[in-house]
Amino acid sequence: MSRATQVAKVADRERTAARLLKSSADKFYDPLIDIDWDAPVVAGKHYHPEHRVSLYGTDLWDRMTPEQRIELGKHEIASIASNGIFFEVLLMQMLLKQVYKHDPTSDHVHYMLAEIADECRHSTMFGKACKRFGAPAYGPPWWVRQLAKALPVFGQGPSAYAAILVAEEVLDRMQRENMNDEGLQPLIRMVNRIHVLEEARHVTFARQEVVQGMANAGPVARHYHRALTAVVSYFVMLCLINPRVYAAVGLDPKAAARAAKRNPHFRATLHYWGERIMKFLDEAGLVGGPTMPLWRKAGLVKK
Ligand SMILES: [Fe+2]
Ligand SMILES: [Fe+2]
View 1 (cartoon, rainbow, N blue to C red):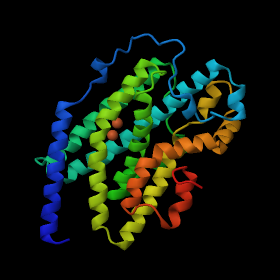
View 2 (cartoon, rainbow, N blue to C red):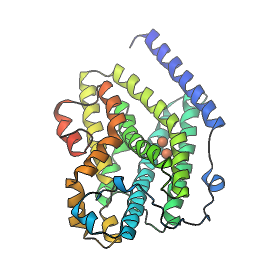
View 3 (cartoon, rainbow, N blue to C red):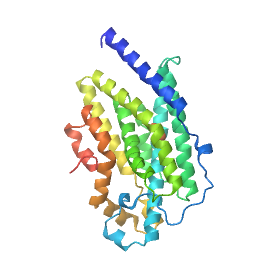
View 4 (cartoon, helix red, strand yellow):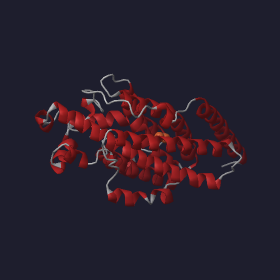
């Protein structure tokens, strides 16, 4: 990279960071103050839209009672939110490592610290929501937790941001729909609204890091970033619904997970949640080549 390009890149980063810092100061929520955690649960309202529940449209679904369907939606949203916590904590680790490496007087570092503060509040909010509704914070299976320890070590540059963007943008697409759904619990809608509002900054920041990182990557690095993005994205999608949610509503977890995997409605939902981020990753040169079967298995590219 020439000296002039490097200077322009740093100036660009600083401009974006300054703008995002201003937005962080203007618009943010504190879930401990801004959410009434004692508000009553509204009888008959859902926690997750029925058509987005993993078993919607299957034979198993037809045999479930209306109460069981609401309950499954509640456990699925707890599984998704607790995976959100898991990926937010991973992102915080990676951001903290960047803070160490860069100039602490720069807006770039100040913004990374602001984003870590946002994620601290989000993880608290998701944890409190699971507790409020009496659902476990399922998170990913233990073996994914072990594998994920390697991400802050291997996840450097554009693929680290791209992988986190998949988690953030999949959640964001789901939450934008849910925050406007009047059939859902008001508390769930508020959690979604807060997260959507604050995540918009994170998406802008990470997208810029991906675009700049890929523009500077050589051919070998591009292959590496493509592979790592596909592998992590696959795990993000695989973890969203922990099979223990099925046992929580009295279903056989293995049979129900199999039915969800084959369910064309749920595959359409996964594709819908990933549509926006996949378009971006494709344009950034992160989708293609030998990783395509993994994207298809993840439900992010149609079979
Ligand atoms: Fe977040
Ligand atoms: Fe975020």
